[in-house]
Image (tube, rainbow, N blue to C red):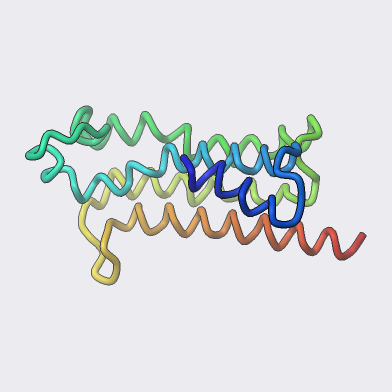
Amino acid sequence: MPRGLFGILASWSVFGNPIEKLPLTIGFIVMTFLIGGSITKDIIDSEADKKTGTITLINTYGIEKAALMTLPFMVLPFAYIPIFIEVGLLNSYLWILSFLAIPAYFVFHLMLSDKKTSRIFENTPSWILMYCTYLLFAFGFSLLTIFNSISI
């Protein structure tokens, strides 16, 4: 997932060494989350994908099985943050980001319950929440890291 791991590393390289434990761990979290969350975009396209022969988890296994298959990829990266802090891969000020496991779970729930497009956006509510969770993580990580470096 280039916009996961590589996006974090590229952004980090503007100010520091991207091959340090902090950007690599954050990139791993984002990459893992987006591996699971990326199927939310396939919900709305499942019929067209079937007609064109495009193979996705949704049209291969159905939405329920696909959602269950991707649930660990969406929730566990955030749930592992306290463990990453304990083993020294992340700084303790980032613990609050572990609460993003909650909206990540709701992405899964929305995948199962609402397959309709949003009236405002081009895709499903699960897709919207997945990207909002990703943005909260990215901005939260950035702000926490900046504020921590200022207070030192």
